[in-house]
Image 1 (cartoon, rainbow, N blue to C red):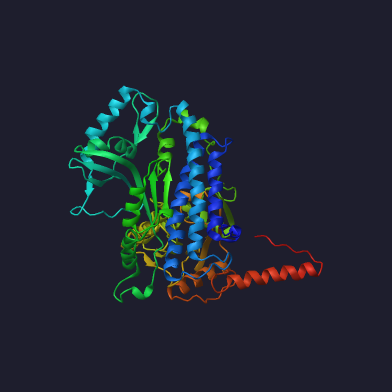
Image 2: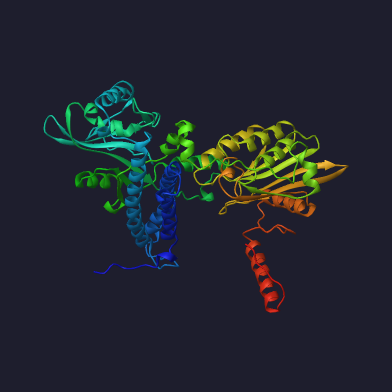
Length: 536
């Protein structure tokens, strides 16, 4: 029977997999510095994890509750989309295996590789065996699965050693060993420069010592990816419960959601697959075998911990953002921005000027308030530090914190609590909408008048990612934009999505209509033979 063909270019999910394939192609490109190729391998894997958790998770939910609802562009049902995703993802796994093998082989010549036992001397093997017996084995919690020891809950993206055992009485049982996440995952190989094994590989190698009274028939490493597409319903919030507490409860549920994907390292057999599929309630098409480590975050650690004298020639030359000539960082910034607008272009220009503006505002005796929207923050955010400082200095600080920033929810909850404890006012946006706007309003007194400095940008108030992603940041003393920003924050506090503004375009009420009107205007000019231009 001929396989049904789909217009993949019209399907969002398959199109995204094509994008991630291009990330993987960067890892395979010999023109890319060797250690940068490692980073692309790690980014590809992280991207794919999130794709399965979110996009496949959403399709999985649709398949359960609306199985016949077809995608408007491709005409595919949720099940058909998932099956197409599984087929395409399997090809990407094979491609990643080949790329990793090629890069790691090159790294072996540089003694900076993930090596196997067969590549080691007897002395090195003995040393790692002692490492396992003295520092790892005492920390393991192995379990034989039987009537008295039921199949455990497998935590999302955590790794487990899974094996089939033949007991002394001749019976066969499955065994499982959680790989402790608190252990250092990268284990240096003795008498090499920077070669290493991974802790899960070392445990897998010595499974027989973990189950000494059984014969190991089969062994592998497994990793489960769970649906992370949590559905938020404000109707579920108790009247006496605030939104932050509700989000904490929802996040606890995420770790228990349905399995979407099972990965197995190198080895598989029909009995193990059947058993795991049965207990995880998945189909064999959701099982993927990888010839490379299932989690590649360690590659950043490998690159970062090796001596710079060795890694520098194998990386892109470091880039240092420039400071803009529009501002003198040695002088107060508020008067300069009040005098002329400043547009920063990250990462080519430094976010430190905006951070300096916040710090200055937190101490300036003329500043009366700072208001800001927050979506994603760095782990040790200077933005939060300066907002806390401003509140402690008696200034009004308002933060509209979007708790639904995917996979940053816990960090945002912690930051919201810190801001509240410092005396800041924290609000959480609207039902059915995420607040993606990036706007910061500084209000100050000057010569008996209220004046404003407004920052509007793309991206996030995140010092780390601002040095990786291209974004724009406008800082202006324009009084009309300042009045719009005042109205914006007032509308946010009273849940008014229909507010009117003179210069700001806000969604979901005004942005599309205004942009379409501007496009129509340029078309009219073009038809009349007059100069016209559209830049997006």
